[in-house]
Picture (cartoon, rainbow, N blue to C red):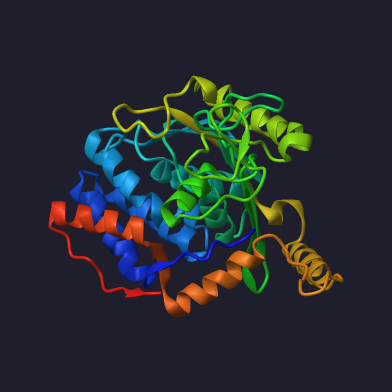
Length: 358
């Protein structure tokens, strides 16, 4: 992953998380919802995933204030079979429902070895890796995915049909943070387009299209994304997006992504699904042998020869390095987002935490 080096304000994770949580509460979100959203967005930003981090907090605050989500949901869990569970998000924040899905999935997988948990009647849950990482920090391996409203053109198409439909894998690693893969099935997430708009920078080549379906690097003209693989090999990303949509719609009881309301419309709620698989490593293999296998894979992978000026990394290594840097110096929040948070703080009478310009 290429880490975006965001310019703006630097704020430590603790005060930033408390600030976002306070603003969400002020906008009407209940305590569990506000805490879950704040945890997820600051966790994402702490690892350099700014596209799905604190940059989204103003959007979530507005969504709560304007009724796009249920601000006080009654999230419920039903065990439908010994290793199959279902979370009803009650149209609340997807972050709260997804953390609940992981919690229940880990509980079931500890007994059965593997568990699948669907989430329905949910909403955008930010970075899917937040939830697989939570499971891995508890000692479980996890796969997570979500669908979304249309923003990615199908292979050979010119009009958006799929969501970015991300998928994430996480697995515990001895002596370090878990191995984490968290990726969209488009070339980039649409939130990176929004981040480039906010920072006034161009997009990478061959990742987005304009209203005519023509490839553009202008973030202001981009209206949809190309699937992973781009114009030549995008059938791979489009195929993954389709199958993720199946798991997050047909298996959860939700509609497929192309029928959902636009994600930027705060006036009405949408209802999406997520899908998680949790695996208990000790049910498959002696834990000592499992840990040795993971350690050997990471060691051998990182030792591979690399091109000049580069090094071979394992999934999640760039984020681990960025997390260490941000733990020392603070989390960067772009100025557009910081000013939007300040506006919410003035509206609700909340205190803005200390921050410095980077």
